[in-house]
Length: 554
Image (tube, rainbow, N blue to C red; front, side):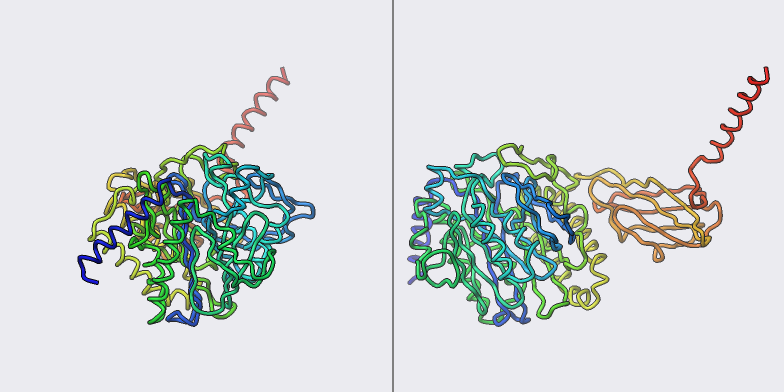
């Protein structure tokens, strides 16, 4: 076709879709996976965009492995269930009011993401509401916490689904009839992936061992599934899709787009940056894989994007890349799962804090400059020009160039992630958010305690409106630079050495906004077990005893 006709066709197609989608689209997401046979490096690569209401802050959280006493329970937004004996360590993106994850990964290298789907079963539930049960995000996190493989995660989720069902708003401030939805999932490990689609307490699942696949906000499996509660051969998409919902139409469009891009990139071997490009895509589909608010069309935005490169062999590092809010305006920061807790700033919400609360009781979260998510939300709201986007791309490319060395030496990963986080924050603050933070970082709580071995443990705490830039911190004791011998984080430092009873301490530091501070103090070492002001207390006690004795002699 000629270019004029092609342009006209594109306009007609867009207008047709707009006419179909006359009601606002909400609770949209996109999840996709590439198996090792079609990736450039042979690793399974997982990607997801999480789309939520524009105020639905979604920090990145770490939960360590835990053992639970017999009889323990887990209280969720609507129900309370028995807790497992052991829950495995997880990292996930969790809305500020929710127990669960929109997307996450476990210590065993199992990764999962969920999608809201609209089914005929859900339509009946809106007319005759069942008992409240799970929201899909809770099922996802619990599945990761209780399984060692993708298939075991599938089994955990489906057994809970069959027992408790899924119903209840999963959108803050929305009633059950407006905010409830059924769920689909992609669950993957280093050897296989599963697509799981649900309708009420029913479900079907398809195994994937090669190639690529993607899901969005509509049922996608026909009769090509291998496990489930339905009669064999049931064409799930044909029977259960609620095609009256604009979100279903949007989901079909976006699934086709993501799958087309996966097929295109697979021809030369899919790379991490290809998966990021899919997450950032704005072409063809409406409202787009990278979702922005469009008046009268959709209410949600992309609230975060996660890429996971799974290990080929057990024991290899699990590589994660995360950006909050819309990836087209974000900077993916790398983490290795084995490093544990992400930088604290990534886990902070806005004004509402992190809770487990029924959405009907939740207030909208609001801006907090100490929250990584809200800072990037501000960048997204302002928009990016091409030059700024290019500078963000260069930052990501630099991160990628250093990742191979970090994976070869995983002990360096925590410091690497902190450095990358500092770089990302410094970049957006200087490029788009000048003046957001004008306060100098603070030093407080200086402590110098001499141990039984005669060495003194010197420490202090740092605080800042956003984050102290770790690479800027310099520690001087008696004029000597001891920075390289100190343990330094964004919240403080610790240095252990033979020190005199009194010594000069100097600390130089910047925050990620470029504000500088210098702290100087004449520090005094105290013996282990000594209480600050102990000598003064003894003097006061002696004086009191003297006066009491004097009065008794009268």
